Image (cartoon, helix red, strand yellow):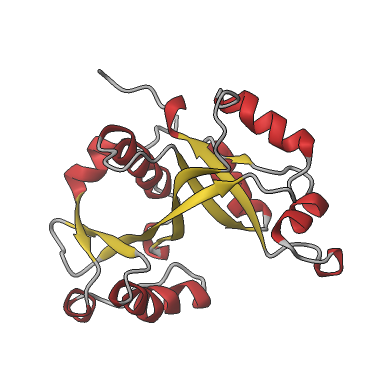
Length: 207
């Protein structure tokens, strides 16, 4: 029977390091099987770091520090309840998160901008373990008042299934109404990405 990888197992096998030009130069080429995503990790993420637009981290094997197992990028963001969101989904979000008593229009979040697993390690549970690590990190070491994790998930079945099984929900389930919320004409459907969120208060941690 398949047993998912735990955060403890992940940390026993890998070290967490911040992406730098020096570290990238010391590592073997990283590929998650998506050319655009590979280029983002090797080029754009370094530019974003210099401009303070995000931080990228790597999990590298302890016994092979030049082997990147996974990479992910984080940046500050928010869930915005603008007048473009249909009342149905606004009410559902406020009820599901018990935030109806708040008058905020923006709720603090961290955007998982990029997340990829080395294709040589795909199918071994690293992707879910990384997500669990990020959840626990922001649930137990939450220094700025971050309530949600959000993603712009690629709009394809395998990617959406990954986030769904890891507890992420669609802010707006109807793709046409999400397009309106994003200010995108319905002529551009289907959307390239879907906005999903995870409520960190749903994660039970030891007090």
